[in-house]
Structures are given as structure tokens and as C-alpha cells.
Length: 383
Image (tube, rainbow, N blue to C red; front, top):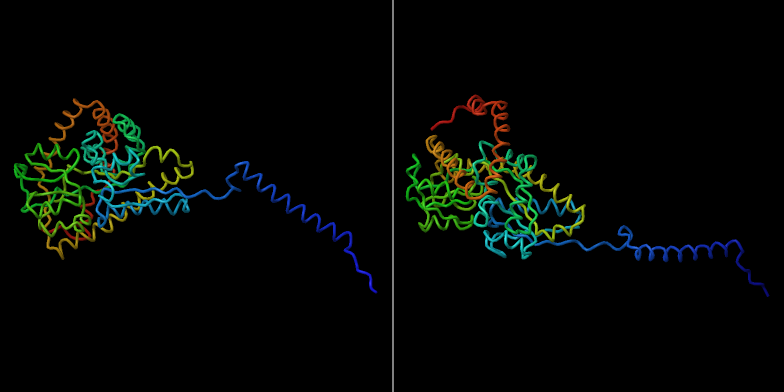
């Protein structure tokens, strides 16, 4: 009968050591989780946010809102997930600020001029005089000239619980769409016209009967004769929303919205609860989306400008200089009146004007005349 061979002492020692190591590792892992180290603990659930824009789903502006959300979602690796609904999905377009402030929505995408009824100084960022600045220079003032701090002060003054980011420089907007060309300032007398923000004061002073409608309601109002004329924003938005279906005349160039910007806002409590990492991603995505939006605008607006003329048979006319001069004079009056009534308006305007005085003078002295180049390379514009 053969004797059963026992395990060698060395092998038994190895097996015992392996069991002790595994037990220690399991105990150690549990201890680390209990100790609260997030890099070892189970992954945190993603933060989900429900947003709304102030734009119709088909508008390129809503596309910009979706672009921003995608940048945040991608950059966060899924840690923050923003869903963006179109205007009216939860609240009307003009109700966005209140909904975000109260927490009905976690955030939103719009323009400060849509909050004009709550504090008229908010509209300085998108329908103010701008003092010769383009929208990118307004963003420069906002970030480096004190605008950001003044906006926070302004929101605090009305008890709005939001974290606001300004981005997205918009090109100068057309004077608007009309039944026939506007040849003089007096043509606005008695005209039923749509605009928003501080431009309401300008066109009212020109004699128009102003109705501040959100984007999705403008074309139906024009079609029913509730409006005689209207402005919204750009060739792509105007074409998508159907302006060429109700009008074939568009006047280009105006000082009523020569330098507009978008706003991204978060509910303050929701934003404050985020990690420093996610806050940094949000801020970085704002600037990335701002650049991308401005580049996309050049591409899309220029294409639709051609399509409006060739396919939709729209006639574009330059706004006469006499009307533009009238607008500038009216800005002087509006700024003086609002500043006398509203100390915060006065403070913000003074800050913006001081920044513009040096920035615009520098730019106009530095930049070459592009019209000269256009005429040289592509021929002078006919008509």
C-alpha cells in the first residue's frame, strides 16, 4: 500500500501567504471605502440637469444651446448631463429667468434682453448702445472690463438666484423685415413693429407701436397683419422661422442691436453644489462654444444670405445713413433717461462706455477697410 504524499512545507507556506494577502486586500479595500476616498469608492451617479432655451426647436439658436450642452456632456465624460428643451416646453420664452431662479429648471439658454421687464439694465448686454463696439468687444468688456461683476450685482439686486455666463458674439442685426423699403425715420410712425429689450425704447421714440414677441411668434403675427414689420436676428434664423414667406423686403444695418450676446444660466444652488472640476468644465465649455458659435454663424449666415436672395427672392436694402444717425441720437436720450431713473443702469453704462472709448478707437485706427478689399477682389456691390 502506497503512502499518500503530503504537500511540501514551502508550497503550504505559499498557499497560506496568498490567502492572507487576499484577505488583507479585501479588508483594506473595505476600509478605504469606509474612509471615504472617492478614487477607490464606487463611482458617483452623474449629475443630470434639465434646461430650456428661449428658442423654437428649429432655430439655429436652439442648435447653439444644444452645441453647448454637448460640449459639457462630452468634456465631463458623462459626470454632468444637460438636456435642453425648446422654448415653451416648460415655461414661455420670457419666463426663463424666473424658472431657473426658482429651480423649476436647472438652467437655460437665452439673451439678457428677454429679462428687460424685470430690470431694464439687463438689456445693456444685448440691446444697448454698445458705443461702437461689436459683440466680441462687448464680451471683452464683460470678462476684463468689469461687466461680469456688474451683472452679478444686477442679478443680486432683483433677488435672482442664478449663475450667469455671457458668450456667443452675434453679428449686427438687420433693421428688420417690412412690406416696402424704409427710406426715412418718419416711416416708423404708427408702424406695428416687433423688437425686444432697450430697442423697445428706441423704436417707440421713432413712433412705432412696439410689441415684444418671442422668436416663434413673430412670423405668425406678421402673417395675420398684427405686425407691419419686425426684426429678429440673422439670415439663418430669419429664413428658418419663415420671414421670407411673409415679406420680401429686408433692411440691413442698424444700431438697435449692433452688438448682442447670448446668456447661459444655471440655478445658483444647483451650480454651487457642483464639484470644482465640473465648474471648470462649464467655464471652459462656455468659451469653446462661444468661438465655435461665431465660426458656425459666419458659415451658415453667409450661405442663407445667398439663399434668401436666389431662392426666396428677398430684396435687401441698406438702411439709409439718416436713419442710423437718428438712432444714435436717440441712444443719447435713452441712456440719459434710464441713467437718471436707475443708478445701476448708470453705473453699467459708464463702465461699458469707458471700455468702448479706448477699445473702439484702437480697433478703428488699427483695422484695414474690408469694404475696399471686397470691392477689389469681388467687384463693387451693384444696386
